[in-house]
Image 1 (cartoon, rainbow, N blue to C red):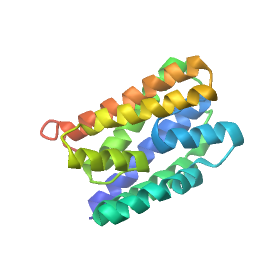
Image 2 (cartoon, rainbow, N blue to C red; image 1 turned 90 degrees about the vertical axis):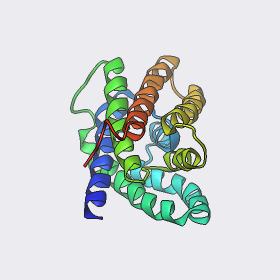
Image 3 (cartoon, helix red, strand yellow; image 1 turned 45 degrees about the vertical axis):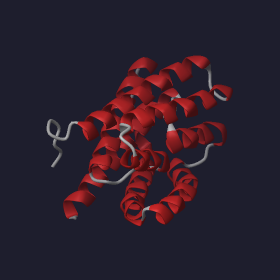
Length: 193
């Protein structure tokens, strides 16, 4: 149990680093609730961690009804991730990279965090939780589900952000999906202790 809590904290830290160090300085978005929360931050300056928790509550209440164990497992993941995103906000702007590099590195680092959490049967957010539950009920890979859902959210961002930023954001989404898929699919190859 202690190992699981530590790994969830590590996963949340990876996500917090990826968002604050790479996505925020370049005004990139990710998919899911994170992406929606980032759009709200860019538009109105909302605090990310709190926004993520508020937007996730309806999805978590559905999870509580359908699968209480996933709800309780993932609630800690949500809270740890939201806390780390807000605690690591000072990383925002300490390095300035080309947008393409921020998109790639941000996606890979966030994907590592999401993948770690998924391996410990928890999720950092509602869309990840939704994808994880669908993956459990079907044979569809969680990384593929995340890619589909996140691409839709990125396309929604077209009304708010420049097209160029959206293309880079799709790279971020692909990186998250790839790393989450790798860390959850190849359990015999990639083993996180």
